[in-house]
Length: 48
Image (cartoon, rainbow, N blue to C red; front, side):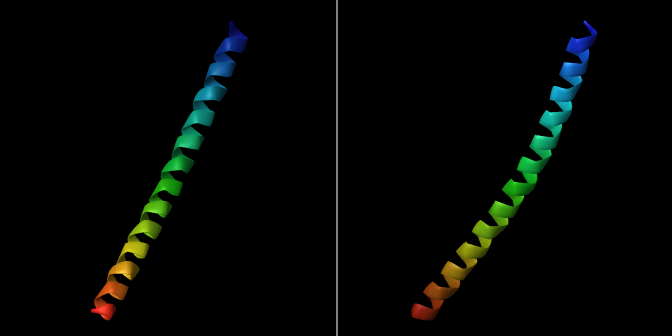
C-alpha cells in the first residue's frame, strides 16, 4: 500500500510539472503567432 501512495504522489507531481511547462510553451507560441500576424498585416498595408 505504501508503494502505491509514493507512486501516486510522484505521478501527481510529474503531471503538475508537465502541465506548467506546457502552459509556458503555449503562451510563448501564442505570442509568436501574434507577432507573425502583426508582421503580415504591416506588410499588407505597405503593399497597398
